[in-house]
Length: 196
Image (cartoon, rainbow, N blue to C red; front, top):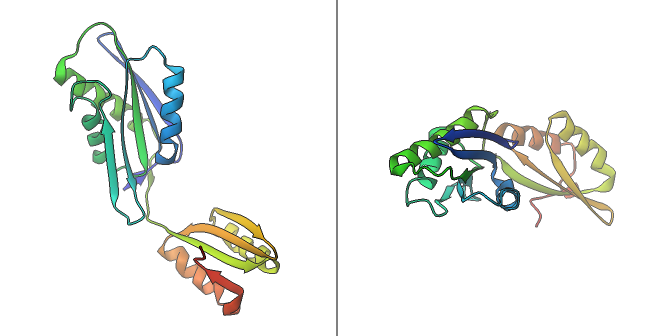
């Protein structure tokens, strides 16, 4: 499986219709769709498709033809995402109608081509399933934990609560093993894992 970390765009024109394709991380999908609708007031269709991994590690998919004939735009767009085995991504295609009807086959090709174009112009990265970790530690140990997380290039968030700190981060299997080994340097009562 593959994914992306940035938003990418591409443009194709077919028989005077313009197709603007935007590929983004799934978390940015709703904001991007809202912004595109405000920026492209004269566009006639905002077709989308997305695939993301839920908390049970199941792939969730959805699509919209947004007024195009059923099955001519959303599904072909989703099929391109499937073909590249993309996950945690969304694609939005903004269409400006050029006055010439493309027919159902022409629409399928146009939307597929637009999504292929943006995917091929994107930087795809291998996707790996990570486990979400949340730990509670004494503030006196914060620097040691931050040093470990930074040394292993792990992104983390912290929240302060009295003399304690909540650290949130994601780990793959190998990183989790290293983290468990690191935690052996502390007494069990100094670390509360997976707190809510």
